[in-house]
Length: 447
Ligand code: MV4
Image (cartoon, rainbow, N blue to C red; front, side, top):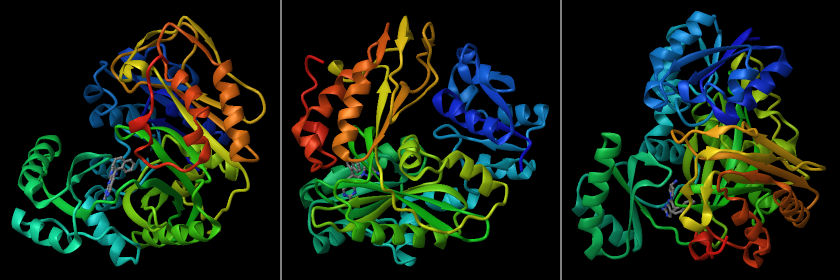
């Protein structure tokens, strides 16, 4: 087992990783930018190294600075958390080169899933259902138009280097094709330095349902069932839940088997997530694979009783997994509390937290790095807490979530709490029958 892990991240996930390391008897090294000097991850770690000024590029994204911190402190592994360097193939490769275990995917796995057209081809070859579309990249507008004619409009062009909704355009009919193509190419070239595009049938009003997988170094992969992440705004998830209200045991078995097949095809090591779109007929299609721990991992922990960070560390250290899939008997939901004003277009609201009280009680878990008197810096993402609730039924979880949100006291900054309270009272949300478009028609006024 590792003796010392450096956590190449900040905020709640850095704290989350430190907590598990402590329980496992593993020493921890925090890294921090000067904006995070007073952060809890710095205080809770056994050692801390300042790695640069506030801008991420010069601190949390600086590979030389982080490798230096690991060398100086003699860390034998690095946990990257989510975001930042967690899906950076170069970083994974450099860690390996320096003899530091990267607690995450290999450079090869990151590359194969990071290029979305390649990922899709890999999954299709493995027998995972994919959305009808181009085989690989489109060579020209003409090829795209020809394909779209066969598939039928609407179609969507996506940047192969994209993901998370960047560099894609929906095309309703052939007259829109040229402009959508030009726009998507320009945008993806500028954003990713790669303007490769692929085409798919556009699935209207889908649900976003993802399967948690974990693989060991010996080729065993298992799944820990699904998370429904359909409640999103501009590709930012706000609420996640498990089980999905629309996933039957039969569908779970098929999606789980597909996810395991896909991850096995790349001999996936570590915790990963296979994202699917589920259409109105209940058919599911591979969308993307995330080769990292995700923000919403705690809802899976609450219903399976696994500590996913511990599992990541164990498989990275060479332990074998049982290979048994897991079907939960509980329900769980997570609300992301962001320092944003939901009544004003979710405008970021950094600043000092003057008063703070966290909810508690049965079935309530808070993952957060903030405290009374803490100043939220403007340099990073605005998530400041996750309220994770578990219970015996979806109805119980929603009731408990509303109760917990009402107990939450936070003053000095605007947060998404009022939005979440209104959501828990929304009949459409309560019905469990909604799509990724749900928040497009939600009333955010007077929150
Ligand atoms: C799609 C789609 C419909 N049809 N692909 C959005 C993020 C990126 N992962 C891919 N996305 C989508 N791809 C086809 N062929 C609709 C979306 C999409 C979406 C997906 C999941 C959750 C929210 C979404 C919001 C808008 C669009």
